[in-house]
Image 1 (cartoon, protein in one colour):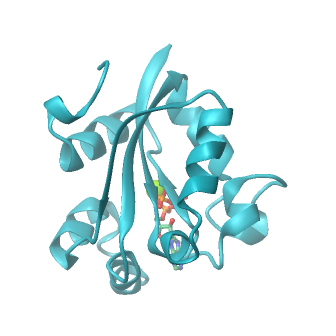
Image 2 (cartoon, helix red, strand yellow):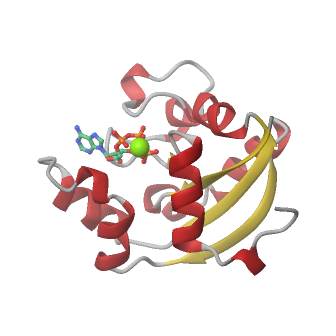
Length: 140
Ligand code: ATP
Ligand code: MG
């Protein structure tokens, strides 16, 4: 099924000049960029985005990390894009991530793990709407 998912190149990756490598990988894997913008998130924006983790012990650190530099926000479209994106990213903790996944290749730690990807179609819809207006999304 043709789907659109939401992806972020996180601050640890933008700082190390990895935007192009990460976007290229998605394109090579058959996902198409349908919206893209670079932005430094405010604390409020990061807290709202990760609201599901509000009660977790790492929440404050996560918000500090996500606001520590610019991020690249993207809509990625393709067959089964939600799951495909998660496969390309690999496990949350790079120590557990499969060979060749973006997190295995680039993540610095379980927190500074280079990329975000929506974990379900419902999350994708919420996250896309959180950062993009309808007119910013192509072919949707
Ligand atoms: P994301 O939602 O960013 O794609 P994920 O779905 O693989 O990652 P989640 O459980 O949703 O993982 O956690 C969200 C983010 O919070 C992680 O990507 C990571 O940056 C951070 N995080 C998760 N677990 C921890 C932890 N134990 N310690 C520190 N940071 C963590
Ligand atoms: Mg998640």
